[in-house]
Image (cartoon, helix red, strand yellow):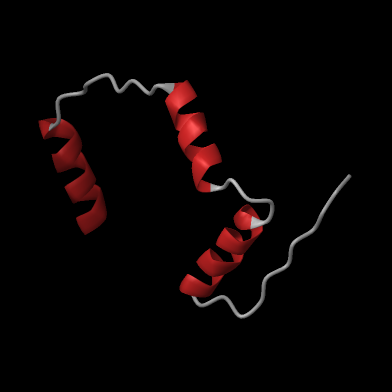
Length: 62
C-alpha cells in the first residue's frame, strides 16, 4: 500500500499546470541526435545492454 499512499499524497498536493512542447524543435533535436543512418539501431542495442538484456532481436517489416 505504500505506493498507493505515496501516489495519492503527491496527487493531492500537486497543482496541475499545462505543459507545452514545441514539436518542431523536438523533431529537429531528435533528427540532429540521430542524424546518421544506423544510429537509432545502435541506440536500441545499447539501451538493451544497459538493462542487461541477454539478446536483442530486430525485425524489419516492409
